[in-house]
Length: 405
Image 1 (cartoon, rainbow, N blue to C red):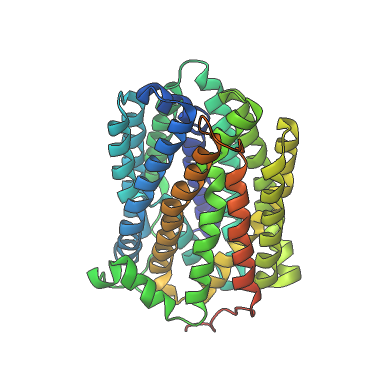
Image 2 (cartoon, one colour):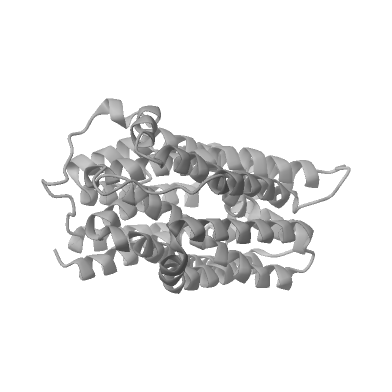
């Protein structure tokens, strides 16, 4: 297998996947308002329900998908996920009720696997010393997608609030055809592991991976981090509209700006930072940067300043690949898919908890008659959670397990 060609393909797959996700962000508030007939505050609550329903299914089925990829390979799992993704965007494009949107999110969450499988695939083809850097490249691919996706979504939104969903469906279908044509399999007989329903249980998978040295604490840290950082995904569009009066076009521009800075950090900063400071300190510094950014977003009143601040906030994204690198290096080769399934479940659990906390907080402080009007309140909550992350990580250094443990 040509690792360089495969690396290019995985990054291209992630890029197209992220474009499909980012393209719908700018219009979600308007679409939900349209199908429910409610207010922006009400739409934020429904947005949280949709995100949480997707995440619940991903939490339950993430370890199943990870274990299936360890047994049957990354290729069939990834291609099946892309097919369902194209179907889900089509449902969202034609949905006339909030319940049809909800059904689409439930189905998509049960089969969500492109991101998880991309990380497992990258672990398969990377030396341990290169994994954190290559995980950063995956982040860069997503970052590029988040530049192109929101910008394209902003342009398509001028054709109607459903046009971006048709665009996302077309991209997912194109990505499926591309993958079917050239994606090789990375799971060999040396690392293939029998499928076990017991280990596919999310709680049991967490127990198995958590028993590896240092992994239980890292997974707990990753969960709290996910709850905090999903504040951007869950409330940014609502925050921008309420705090700065942004249109879908401006929301798309702000997301594209963040995507640009995020991509630059992931592509060019992860490797040098980890070589200079190591994965543990890189993760800690990233948490501090994210904490400062969230505190500033609480009080910010200038839209241009908010976009400029995303450049600083993007520096904090060094934390994710650093944590992923520590976890991957502490996990045997035949459990990389299982690890990524557990990480997907932790991310999903964060997505379940975060909308309830963040969208609920946004609703409370922006609802008609609110004693204090504070669209930035969810970022205050995220800052408190990031303080907790710093305490968890800073109590004592976490070292990855030795090779093969």
